[in-house]
Length: 337
Image (cartoon, rainbow, N blue to C red):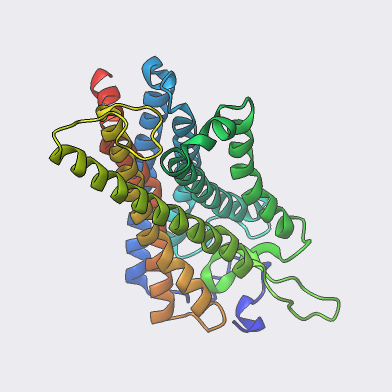
């Protein structure tokens, strides 16, 4: 992306200079999607938090660390729906930034946007690692998740890393936060050197840390989980043929009976569904940012970028429905309510 494409960051009141990023039709789709996601995501995530937080049986389950990570995921998605989506709807509906570019919110909006999305992703990583340890290395589970303070520490890391990264452009240590007239949005921008030229933007680095590394961690965990589940099924089939249903058939199981084995497989499938939605929602935007960041992303390229962003927004709606309605344990909680 050329330096000129960032334009003058100081004046968002010139409508002739705004709105060149995407077509009017795509803006209408984006504004409608943002409005719908804000409503459905808020309802879904609030309901999930209430169901998990107020039900004693769920709180006292032996999988309480999993519940903590799900609540972290729902909290981040709820903040995204409440703080980010309404402004997205206004931004695309008007094809202009709804406030002045010099306002405090213009600097806080990118922090809220990238911070909540990255926290949601890292909560998903923590959730996947929890599944991995419980199924593949159950002997580690006690020291990692039963030691006092370990789960709160992991949750703190999930929230500290995203906002720590966003502190770099917020305090202009690397990059800066400001108005980009071309995309009619406040976002992460390159730093301005003493000679008046633009240095490298930290946005690509933020996307690498926010998606590429979590993606690698999730792929490795699920590769191991799939292998463990396949070995488990083969062992169970052998015992079934012999006419012996053994409670210790699961390799590395924590002395769980058949019903608990089924619970583990069910929760693993639920988490895998969240991972699949994660890939569908985040991979297109990551590719678009890497491939289109250095181009004049207007017209069709801008439309592709916005459509990829809309997919990302949907993760805030899909996650609570997958977890709250896809898991039999959480379905019971919903019926009780």
